[in-house]
Amino acid sequence: MSTEMRLQRQLEHNKKLREQYERERISVSQASILLIQYCQARRDMFIPTVWGEVDKKEDPFETQATGCGCNIM
Image 1 (tube, rainbow, N blue to C red):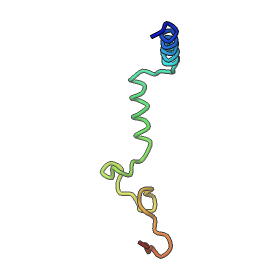
Image 2: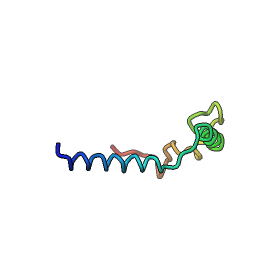
Image 3: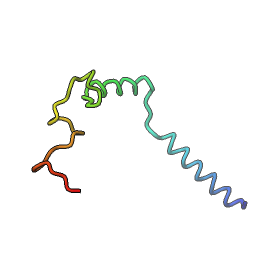
Image 4: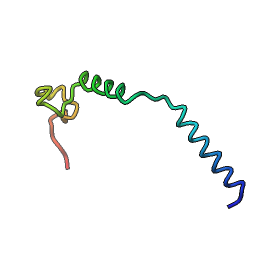
């Protein structure tokens, strides 16, 4: 491998390391608090034992009947 190729690889590696270093970071405890707050603030349709039964009109995962409700195969 030529010297120029090794230099190019090292420069590219330095560039990637510099980008990672400059990335904004938060502590694990702060990220955990934010995740808990997010989960408590949003209703999860897949956990009815916690949030109660969901009305079919409010459920985004329920197929909504349109027209006569017929399916053509």
